[in-house]
Image 1 (cartoon, rainbow, N blue to C red):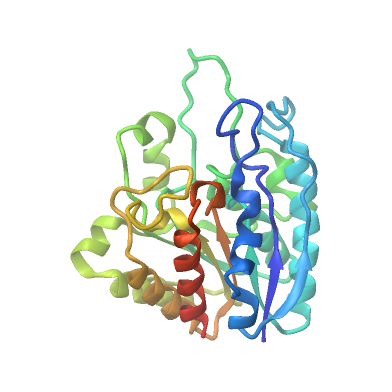
Image 2: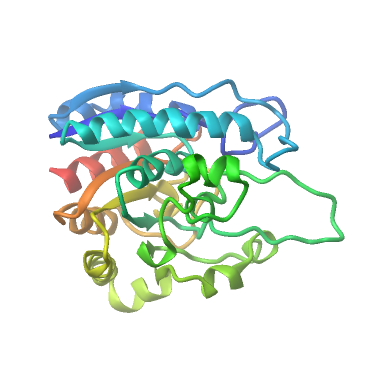
Amino acid sequence: MIAVLDAPSNLGLRPPREGHEPGVRRLAHALRGHGIVGRLRAEDAGRVDPPPYVFGTDQETGYLNGPGLADYTERLAACVGEVLDRGEFPVVLGGDCGILLGPMLALRRRGVYGLAHLDGHDDYSPRRDPSAPPKGLTAGGMALGLATGHGPAALTDVGGLRPYVEEEHVAHIGVQREPEDFELFDMDAFEASRVRRFPIEYIREHGADSAAEGARAHLEAAPIEGYWIHLDADILDKSLMPAVDSPNPDGLSFEELTSVLRTLAASPRAVGLHVAIYDPERDPDGMAGAALTDTVVAALS
């Protein structure tokens, strides 16, 4: 049985403009508007509201909305845990990628689990310039790094459970690079990590199905009890999914994404999934949101 849980947090993103909160907080409402709960024949598991969005960096954690993120991670983990305890398959509607910490903490409390990370970016490590003034980090852009234990204890070590997922228990699909990424992120750190990687170059050479099958095989062979699926909508090509904060110039088609999700979700080791980053404010006619909903429904049906 699928249970749909809303996690409308935008705490992990910068304001798109001064004084304006990121619109990803409306993702869950939009996908529900496209009928995702009924079409999945799912239970409605309710909603976990985030604390208020704070403009400005938290000095203790170094992250935008650091204290709010720490609080939200624990509350979301508790609600995901309740769904898992009922033997149901959670489908969590975000939100930015920082919501990843909640499900991974919920699973870590239960044992050792893995992660299928579908994302157009690595979300792993920032590039630090000692000569530049300090700038607050965002959990949305560093979610995988935080989940694998890299960052302040308030976000990465709740209950002494760092890391929530081991790097070798992660399979990443879809990363692609743009020139500005080399200025913002530490690419070498991600390449040196133990994360199993299926970047866009692999997909273009071998196909999306091969990447999905490789990721599933990697996770099924790992000494874990199951795995979570993280879906960032920016894994899709920007011609199809412009409604994200960092549109992807070389992303997947909806057909490719459907096939990848279906392969990963069909595994008996898959325990849940969340959807992140789609911003309805950037999708005035709702077409991208409707297609994203169709994709998730097709993959899980």
